[in-house]
Image 1 (cartoon, helix red, strand yellow):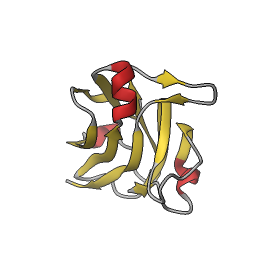
Image 2 (image 1 turned 180 degrees about the vertical axis):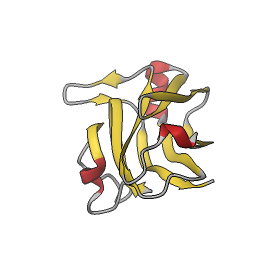
Image 3 (image 1 turned 180 degrees about the horizontal axis):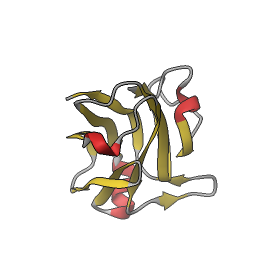
Image 4 (image 1 turned 90 degrees about the vertical axis):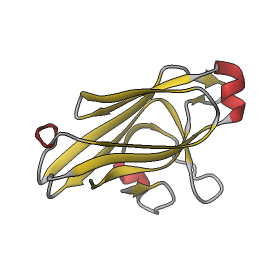
Length: 132
C-alpha cells in the first residue's frame, strides 16, 4: 500500500501525481495517474484505493468515471455520481500480476479540469495491493 503522506511516496509514481503533499495526507492527480508497486507474492490480492472526488471539480465536470487498470488490464470502470471520499477495492486475477517484479496501476478519470498551473483529476490518499 502506498500512502501519499509517506516520505517516499513519489518513488512509486510513474506519472500524473503531483509531488506537493496537501494537508499532510493527500496529493492531486492529473489525467492518467500511474503507480509502480513491487510485489513479492501475488496470491490472493486485491487492489484498493482511497481517494476523493472533490466538490470543486465536481461542479465543473459532473459525474466522473474512473477506470482502474492493473498491468494494462481493465479491472473495473466505476462512475462516481457524487463528490466526496471514495473507497475502491477489487480482487485482482493472479495471472495479471508479476511476482517479484514491478506491477503498474492506472486510475484514469474520464473528466479533468484545469487552471493556469495544473490539470486536476481527483485527490489520492492511498492505493496499492492488500490481501483479499
